[in-house]
View 1: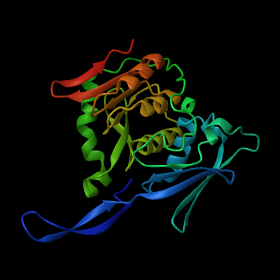
View 2 (view 1 turned 90 degrees about the horizontal axis):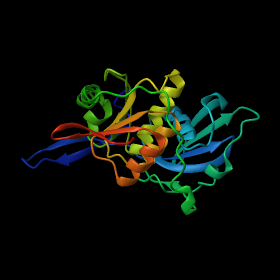
View 3 (view 1 turned 90 degrees about the vertical axis):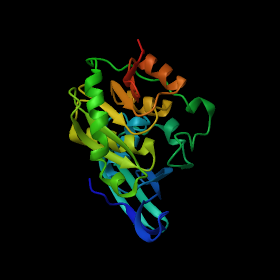
View 4 (view 1 turned 45 degrees about the vertical axis):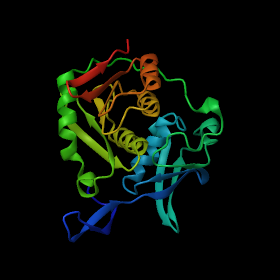
Length: 257
């Protein structure tokens, strides 16, 4: 992934003078299934095929990546249309498809219409080996250099996939942390990655929505730069996921078993 999806702006420096600054793009992205509108998300317009697939899986709209036949991305006036064409008999979750309002980039709840849609039951994550703290520390330390977009605009989140040793493979970026994770999930699905053999590392705090998304696709460990909320930790315990974060004393592993 390159450092695209940014626009130029002129800024005044505190020490005097002016320079050009690259700003991350944030545009409305309309996700639909077989032509039926689902949700409008505010997102960075890069890796949108990954975003569409990852959102479909992490939100439970589609049961598997095999149900997607084509993802069509079309710039339109005021934003971007992304239509997910599914297999002829694919079941698109109507409960999840009731989410039909705007989803802002910093919010994982926008578009929810009922309280019982907010916190979903999480499926148990099974068959994963424990992740070592030195592997998590390695991935956290390496992530900034892998953020091509953020090095330019300094305003986007990243979600990355690391193997058991902490070696980072895939990285996806977006103005919204939820979007970045969805893009990563989509990229992992398209690559056929076994999500039980590694972990996800992110530049954001660990919110409960991120835990829900990770559990939905079998990610066994989520490591973030900031600590989880109490609800995120509770959901991780239900799913059997490991949570970790950076601290002045090194990597912290939260008790989830």
